[in-house]
Length: 347
Image 1 (spheres, rainbow, N blue to C red):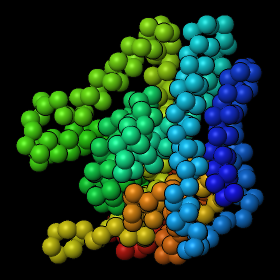
Image 2: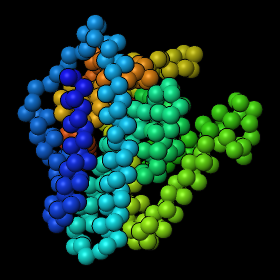
Image 3: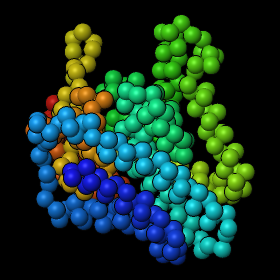
């Protein structure tokens, strides 16, 4: 069954569980797997640009297995938080193990947490959107739901979008600008939505207030369960989780810009405004996030249905490999800048 290939997405939390359980140098199993083993496999294996045939699209769309695999990430993520919290609060660890645990859980929070939250946050049903927000909670990034759905998908590939990296902007600069601008943008969007519905900013319908309250309550629960040090440690894991997300944001639209028309409006989002990858491992581990152009074409389209478009710009490597390359700005610019269409480059 084609659906079972997405079980590969669970290899990341599985590697975290194994590494955390074994401890010692094994605690670094997840970062080694995610950013060394997977990139090597992506380079070694052939790419696959095939799309689903038309006669199987509807059966694939309604197949519940694809959705169940997303939902399964919720108990997995919170189980790993519990495991890490218990281990850290017990102490008796080498100093380097803390870093291994933090990176491992942070990677899980970014991939099986925020990435799955992104998919569920675009669904039409309220329960699925709720589950998506729940997965954003451990990374303290619940505002992402508002900014991404009502901001990024409107402003992608424009200077107005916090999540679009500028030409020659390093990923380190982008982490700061994207995190701060997305947060303030979420508040502005929330205010505009409340005004549109005739409600006060101080209304109980202000979701940003609820997100703030829930994240503070989550920290309070961690404190009661594990104490102050472990709460700070799990907070750090959450930061690693959203830094991972921002690194993905960085590579998804780096240097790509939509033209502003004489009317002052931007051209519509097209396939050329997102970087894509057909490298198989990254595709299935990230639930087809790498087919990003089609996601922007129709954001409610389920991950298993996303298509590849010939007109979309391709990365020379998969998303996991590209994330590693982005951490070396001169190398990243050398590889990616020549691939950006000339008309999109600043003059």
